Image (cartoon, rainbow, N blue to C red):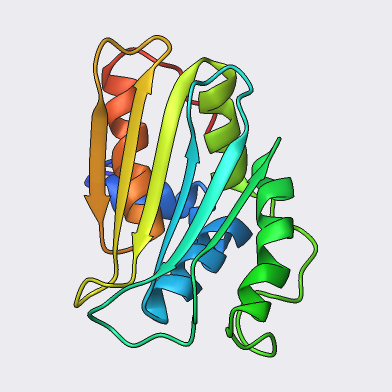
Length: 177
């Protein structure tokens, strides 16, 4: 007799990202919320090994957005960086009564995974691009134990991160999620 599990395929990258909890991560939800409003939102950590995080929120020329001007912040952690970005985004015209504004927590599976990468010396760049006709995500990782640059793209955060986790595992890294 076959069990119902026997015919199941292992989760694909999108499902792997969703199962890891990326779909509920406050960092990723905030970036997606911004992209849904036409903002190009990017997080990066330049040279790994605890380097500061930088957030950029930019209005673009193609899709109308309530963001009146660009916003840039830096912080020692993703949480610190985005906590300082939220009031600047409000001051630049985004409505504070909507979206993921009212939570103090910006840490979740996505933020912890990104911090895990920088702790291992990897450079990280994550962009939610609201200027595309359909908001899209780009994720680049290089440095540390990697010999080159890895890239994944997706329409949603959990798919993009799920694809990146699969790539990192293929390169022999034991990813914690």
